[in-house]
Image (tube, rainbow, N blue to C red; front, top):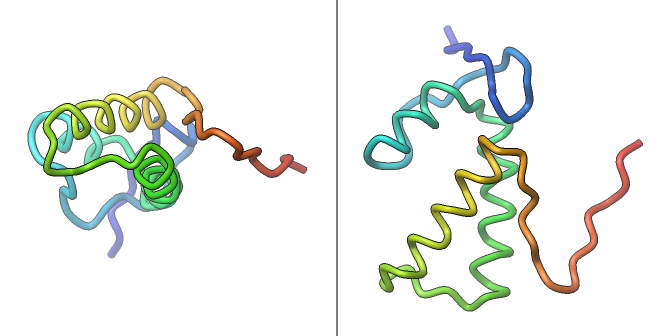
Length: 91
């Protein structure tokens, strides 16, 4: 049976993640409060952000910047700024 969480990003009950995908306190917060659907949305944004800004995940500063963008996107309703990308209009 799937875990259900109240997703803070989507503001609705949804299937929760199967296991903690990110380490530490931030990872626990994501596991407890973010749905699979919201996590998939973040992963798409994360890939675009890493590619656009040419982030190096071995660089602690780049990882910190990416974590800040992740927390902002998932919990604070901040949109990820990606130069030259226009999100599709919502119907």
